[in-house]
Image (cartoon, rainbow, N blue to C red):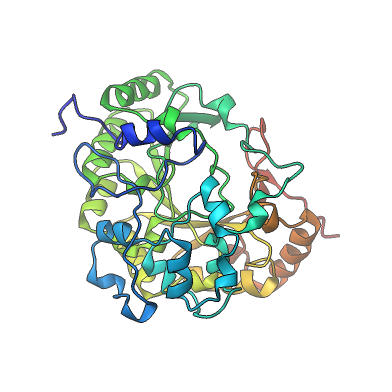
Length: 387
């Protein structure tokens, strides 16, 4: 039992208050504290071995992998045998949004390849600091739906809970890279108010765990919250949006599966995978554990320039996902967040690629092409207008 006086997902408060003027978004990277009953964990600078000295992720728990994650550009370059020029602009970019990549994900990148599609997703670049017209710190205008701390209510029948402001990996195109997580850091009493709000809104049938990455939180904390939600009779489904099982597959352990399956809620896990190279044996095994426990596993991707904006890349991704037991769900046009313009592509290009994708894959392997537009009542399907 977690004592009422302890904080739930609120850890590192004093440090974050000191640094709040430096970062408007995700909590700053700092020394990680392994999950406990009262502490939210964050990311941590790792040791500095060369890549050949990096142990496989099977040698470490998922908490230890969080501690070993790389947050130093120079260390990233050394680990992947990249030229120093690759990280020339990284120092400036990480002042706004830190570098963070776990070693199991790093191990799937090609050494010496500055254009590796996994590397490009996490590599800080000077492009992020350039003026970007039409891009904003809150591209989905979520502040308008975040009137209750910890809760975002945009769509009918479902609400999103920002479980934590931390992630296991910092994707450079993240639409919440500037989200005010410091205003959404809740203690036990605050979470009880969120539960009370859910109890009073009988229109809610689905709760979505998000963040940050919700699986960063301690399993005891997640178990407590899930138990409270499951006791609300009008809530039928729990959805977990997470990238952690992708970048550290060991996160799907017996403790995680226990709270995921302890309630009568129908449970869906939505992964975030953008490229086929992210799918390896460890991830496939993690998905197998989820499916064996009766959990539906879906995937959402972002259409990213230079990473997956081709028929070949998306077709290979869908095939790899399905082989791993994951069903393609959404393909998002990128949200126009400040700092990510260099990942963006035109809608016309996305439509052209998508049309060809439809001709190459069976329908169940083609994700829905959508864009999220503020104030709309749902994701907006993209008109591909095939005559």
